[in-house]
Length: 120
Image 1 (cartoon, rainbow, N blue to C red):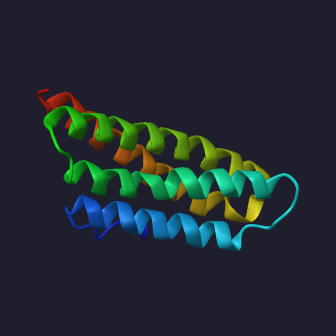
Image 2: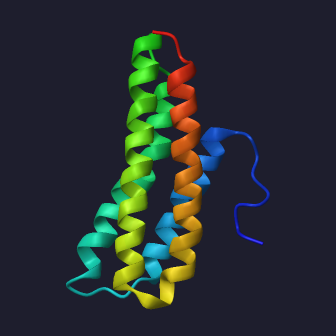
């Protein structure tokens, strides 16, 4: 059973929890010349998903909302990349990175669907 099994359908909460889990895995990672820059990138992309979703919910127009949703999708895809790199750089975190990658994939699909279904 993975740590995302009891998800609420509150996307703000889900993205915040995802960001917290990204922070936790990054705190566990060994700090060295390879992992440190990856960790920084991962924290930035992984935490910005929820921040941009909160901004989308406060958007001033449908166009602004759709733009913020596209940013959420882009950040989720970038997060998948950095999770893959962290898994390669830190063998002990491979399984946690795999689970987080799966959640980032689900978020990517959710934001893709929201973007497609949002009329400008």
